[in-house]
Image (cartoon, rainbow, N blue to C red; front, side, top):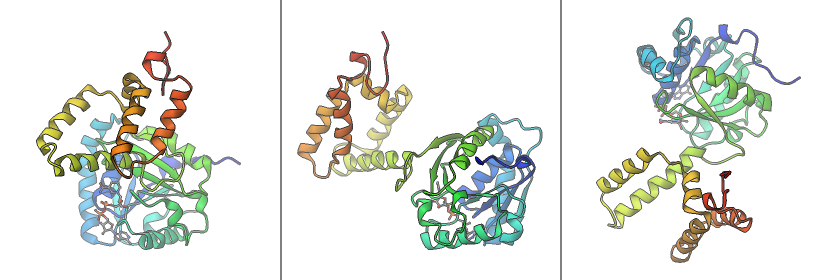
Amino acid sequence: MPYTLPADVDERPVVIDGAGTLGRQIASVYAAGGSDVRIFDLSVEQREAAREYAEEQIPETQRTLGLRPARRGRVEVADDLQEAVAGAWMVIEAVPERIDLKTEVFGDLDRLAEPDAILCSNSSSIPTSQMIGKVERPERVLNTHYQQPPELNAVELMSCGKTDEGVIEALMEKFLRYGLVPFRVRRESDGFIFNRIWAAIKRECLMVVEEGVARPEDVDAMWEIWTRAGVPPFRLMDRVGLDVVLAIEEHYAEVRDGIPEGPRKLLREYTDEGRLGVKTGGGFYDYPG
Ligand SMILES: NC(=O)c1ccc[n+]([C@@H]2O[C@H](COP(=O)([O-])OP(=O)(O)OC[C@H]3O[C@@H](n4cnc5c(N)ncnc54)[C@H](O)[C@@H]3O)[C@@H](O)[C@H]2O)c1
């Protein structure tokens, strides 16, 4: 039978396990979307601070995400993990970024959570395949990587390698109801889609400053111009021409060590087919007429 969300999903709480910077932001999104939220954290101070934060942020989160549920969700705290997860349809782990810790946490969640509960990790860099050593039902485990909601409302979903496809599909649909924009990570990756892109941008920003090529304020001013124009990377490459992009990449590869071959290989696949971008009517996208 293909997986479907439980019929009573909207009456059941969402649990946040680990209520630091991200845990409390995620808590606010679910409460703002009308789900009851239960917060668990080992630290009593963090639990209480997270409840206050999540509750306080609900109106702003609703405004930012355009949420108008019939009622806002209740935000509760629990000082015991078993009590926290009782009845929950989804548990989101946001404890510190350590494989040993997350492996223990997932073992506990698998043992304590309802048999039909979905178990999610918010890890930024560790695939869930590395956290399921103590899990008996890995088909309900996956990464759901939030950034800084509500402003940054993208969520990336990545299988643990054994995740039921139906779980991923059901969440892709369900997340929309909370004003989130879900993206499927199509294979296991060390680092999520946007983190990897951001890592490359950040590294080059630091390099041009370290090499004395630019000042930080020049980089920031140029960034503002580029982001204001709002042309996304693959559309921009199509505008520039993929043959030109390839030539630029070949030049970097000649003068710099460590430039990976993959990006040039991908570009050659397009240029070999004559797909050079806007000027040939097709590149990464089609431009009919
Ligand atoms: N900070 C970010 O911008 C960001 C963005 C995306 C993803 N993440 C990911 O979210 C996770 C948490 O990051 P953070 O920045 O919120 O960390 P944080 O240090 O702010 O919060 C971690 C919380 O976990 C609690 N904790 C520690 N051990 C615990 C346990 N065994 N059970 C329950 N609670 C426990 C701590 O008391 C703390 O409140 C990490 O995996 C990180 O990669 C963070």
